[in-house]
Length: 398
Image 1: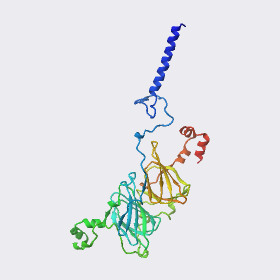
Image 2 (image 1 turned 180 degrees about the vertical axis):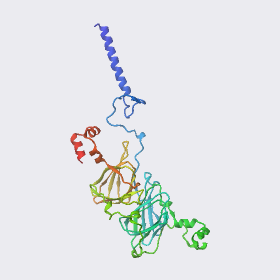
Image 3 (image 1 turned 90 degrees about the vertical axis):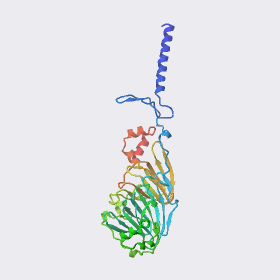
Image 4 (image 1 turned 180 degrees about the horizontal axis):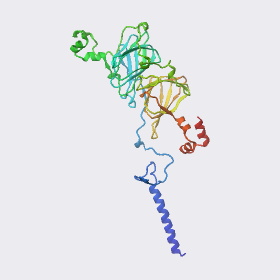
């Protein structure tokens, strides 16, 4: 072969190699992204492989929203104070992430009452922390129920049902209220004193069959929480509905609520245990020092916490490469959006106690370790490339 021919073939081979390299470079994923050019890979049935990219995807911060703050100090908020007690709230207005659930910490002095009222946009769920109280509720059929409560008891009032709360006995009573609408505010309550104050007196006279001038002595504005004489427990008789429809649930005394887990205890009431509670579930979780509620996510509801006791840490996973860790102490609230992965760890030296609610009567969650245990080894080895077979096996054993 003469020198000219060898030179031509060498040049041709170099040209072909350069062309392949150029084509590969053209098809390569742009550095610092996980994207190729528009339309690469083909259309419909006519598709083809693309040159592989990085071992893990790149998440451009511009493609996902910032990880939201999910901690708020409910008890650090300003209280609404009237003659018989106070209330502090955490709504979407103060705590923007909490779109599905709002919360209130309410304190009633002995003899005080949270006046007759209703909520137009939310149902009310409550957990009694300390003291005793009595509720009265009226539903659209005209049926009413009166119930007495002790620490650890729950109540639930459907949206729009008229109700009130009265302290009984000589101790103050305080409780956590949770509402299935993050936009609900205690300042948006429909209260009986407020209504009577703004209604023409001739209409009130016709409605109640009384002289119009008697309403001059009624409160000028919303009483909200009104001071009053102490009601002895012996005089506060209750009149409950049939058990299957009652507004009351003995969370800490009903064996149906027990759901133990590794690291602590859980008491939960759902619509299955408490039929009237159709739009919410709720309970109390206790985590021992150094232990945690394992990585999991909620399938069908947002999750809301109020921290009663101890120190805790919540790690939140929000997809798109986003994660955030926050520390919690008594009086704080957390909000976990539906579907976000999370875990709760006790970082203190005493039990961590948390009141928890969900905005769905059915409680559904999935644990990460259960998902791993149910998956084939070859799938896990592919997902966790670099992990040894021994590590995978131990993950599956838990």
